Length: 468
Ligand SMILES: *[C@@H]1O[C@H](CO)[C@@H](O)[C@H](O)[C@H]1NC(C)=O
Ligand SMILES: *[C@@H]1O[C@H](CO)[C@@H](O)[C@H](O)[C@H]1NC(C)=O
Ligand SMILES: *[C@@H]1O[C@H](CO)[C@@H](O)[C@H](O)[C@H]1NC(C)=O
Image (cartoon, rainbow, N blue to C red; front, side, top):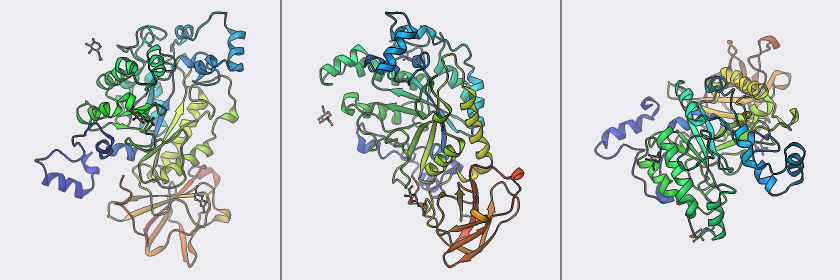
């Protein structure tokens, strides 16, 4: 990836070659030191990833992946669901043998993900229920090899993803477990004891990293004190000594440091601030708006439409985020066709408009001042100047698009991605007026958002400022 480094960085690392290479310094187990680590470049360039929530909760597939918790809380719909459908005395653990995964074909999943245009995939290795999707050393009889699938779900996906050169493999891991007796014991001790992290969660993390070498470690556990997990110790190992020290990226949920520490910030689920942040961030978002895990009691209106997804993708990228879009496979290992269709549609859109997404940086403006639903990204071109991408989520009314944020120079050219002819424009005092070409619907590049590419604008590119 050296050819993607800015020239000054390459030059600098050549000059100081007697010290450790820039970007792989030695990190101390404290947030000040850990926060100084530059994020490996692949992550910001990738922009779009797929999240997968899959576990024992995919068996009842009712309500959400929080099924066990809600049932324990004796919430009516869950209690009634159990009463109506399962014999008395049926426990949550009894669902595990029905987590069969007989249709789980990781190569097929990976084809679906690749066709979506995603550049990374993050699978739940373990959710709050504690069931590990790999044969963990420290999850005796509550893992996918001993019960249910009798397979290493994590390992099989890792192998399938590594066959594709453009996809990075990542793992989600829940630090805490709702009902683990050790966790409950620590909780009863007001987290002054650390039985659970020492014997369960932290060994799992080391095991996952050494065995599967994920490029993303997506931790979940924002509602507990980070000192209880001693997460900086694990992160210092991850960044200094682990097999993925040069490629791995992490999020911000290592205890109560969400939106404060970590490589990229997730802040809260479905985070989409609508403005630029001074830090790399990620919008994690399920296609079924009501659940991350697969649920049977859903309906079409709960699924995001492709128009909504493209809008969220464009807003997110324009404001410096990555989008991690979630699907929930069924207990038997299928990605149902509506998820597949949404992923295929995003892929179709990215085939035309991906140039305005992958490898871009935020521009001086994120959205336009005159035209609503229009978002900008930018990219340095090979001539050393900047291409600006104006992505409009609505086809311009009467074919006239007014950009308040862009000013043309004599060298400016305007094109529409996916359309071969140059596009006419006129500089007016109020802004740039673009005459959208008259295109028959049958040859419209892609109907959920259109990208006008603007070269050699008057506005300069604040490259350093937004180099995360
Ligand atoms: C599992 O535990 C055994 C015994 O403690 C250890 O030798 C082995 O390295 C562990 N495996 C992993 C992948 O951590
Ligand atoms: C977290 O734990 C540390 C050490 O036990 C304590 O000093 C700190 O006040 C706790 N933070 C919060 C927010 O409770
Ligand atoms: C730009 O985006 C922000 C945040 O979503 C919004 O408040 C503002 O109205 C937008 N501006 C225009 C002109 O649409």
